[in-house]
Amino acid sequence: MRTIYPVAVVVLFCACSHVTASVPVSTQARDAYVSGYVSALLRMKFHLRSPSVQVHGTTVELRGVPPADQTSVRHAVRQVDGVKTVEFLQPSPSQLGAAPGTSGGNLGVMPMPGSSTNPGNGNFAIGMNTKAMERAGVYRLPTGFLPPGRLFQPLIADPKWPTFSVAYTYYSPYHPNGLKDVIPVSIGDTIPFERGNWADHWQWEAGMQADVFAYFNMDTVHSDLQNVDFLVGGYFAVRHRNFSFLVRYYHQSSHLGDEFLIANPAYYNGLRQKISYEELNALGSIDLLHRTVRLYAGAGYLNDVAPEELGHWRFHYGAEYHGRPFFHKGTFYVSPVAGVDFKNWSENNYDTDISAVGGIELNNGKPDSSKLQILLEFYRGHSPYGQFFVNTIQYFGLGVHYYF
Image (cartoon, rainbow, N blue to C red; front, top):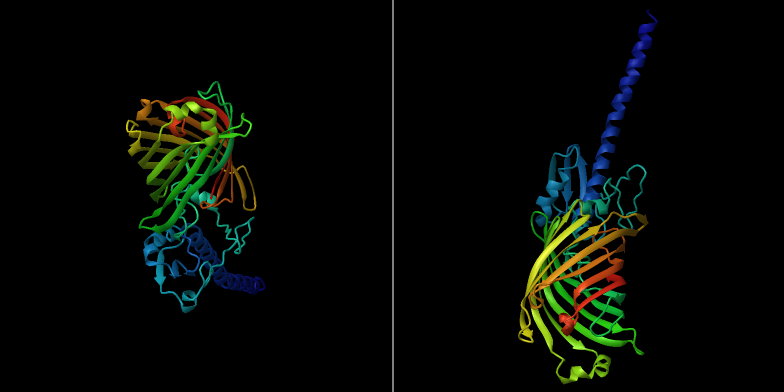
């Protein structure tokens, strides 16, 4: 028994020494992990790339966070497990001189198990990737002059939404002007000029929309141009998490193609009309089910119309599906998309025009990414082009659409 006591004392001393020595190491590791987590959160949620992050137990100290963002940042950081207090300090001299987009202070990101980080390209693994944060409704787009992305996302099934696109469409069972094989093209986009933040995760954006919509009859010798619609105007958009709203005022005018007029001389003798108008248009949109489903609706009022008897009211609504990526490699993501779009115009007795699309979308996995879509298309209703709005048409097609 006398021999056992000294041995027990030695074992107990070693164990206590081991525990005492391991406590600081564990605390340092936890602080480093929280620091990396918060740094990545600030980058992806608020696009803040220069603040420094210091963690002292349950307190997080942040330097360089703009005053307008501090309320939202404090709320977000306090959601991190183990964080109780968030303090904002003045930027350090080195941060004040840091170049935009570069890191100042402790912005290291601790990699999660089974993942990697590359600070050079902005991919950070924090247990929730950028796409997941976007679906959760917490991602905010970059602010400033000519920012990337757009607050109000394109309506992918709307045949007159500004985009760069080309498609092949087959008109069936008939078309009043005998069209069968048609190539519609679109050259334009939504261009944000300025974007800013408001309190409580609100963002605003102002810019312009412009496009040229044209279509060609491929069953003629020279693929005759049939019609061109010009659209240009300004817009203002706001977004709060999964809700977005767009107001725009734009001009549209329509012009028949020279080849069409030559092939259809009757349009020189009274059938040709001047079609132009300005439209004040408002649309609201909400994302549901982790941003896989989108619903939108709105209305427009036309003024300064030509001809004068052109209808004034237009109603617009629809739904979209944006699925999770089924393939990705590096920054190359492929996702399924689909949409259906409805319009009712007083000029056509509020008959319903239906447009439906489905296919895949290619992007880089970020909310402000450019998008390339390859879509099967279907349309039934009144022609969306120029003075042919009174004609009832139906077509199937395959199109490629690109959004900057």
